[in-house]
Length: 189
Image 1 (cartoon, rainbow, N blue to C red):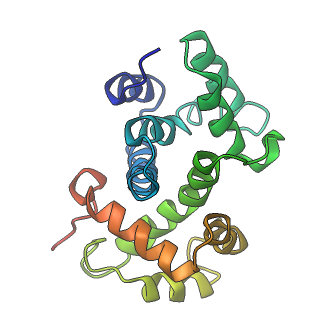
Image 2: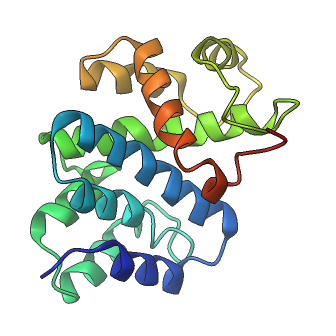
């Protein structure tokens, strides 16, 4: 099967109608693509995995179904097993350990991209373009801010990539800045 963004985008939009979930998928895609470039990996393939990692979530948001239902659909469509494995590994409860660089990167970018989006939207500019890693680090200390995001997971995500947390945050911010318009994060900049 030829893995390409256009097909993945159509599939994502078939199952996901929420603008915030679509933007989340694109934010994770931007981050994972950025790391693919950094690591010398296949940016298109990694981007497709990131774009599709939650495509089933809106229809099947429970731990019993997500991401299992989505992987069944991908398998029926002929996606390779490594795609499903990476998507399964992003959910701690799936029982699929993160082993490959792609699997670790997807997990490391998923929650952080959402947290960076939230940190951008509460800025006066509502923009990722003037967001700095120190601001994100400060927000992480505020337990009331984006309280559903596990701070330990954010810290472990950098460890999984072998990076200091502030560097990982800076990387994801930079990767998301490349797509600020599509992500709705240009704000007033």
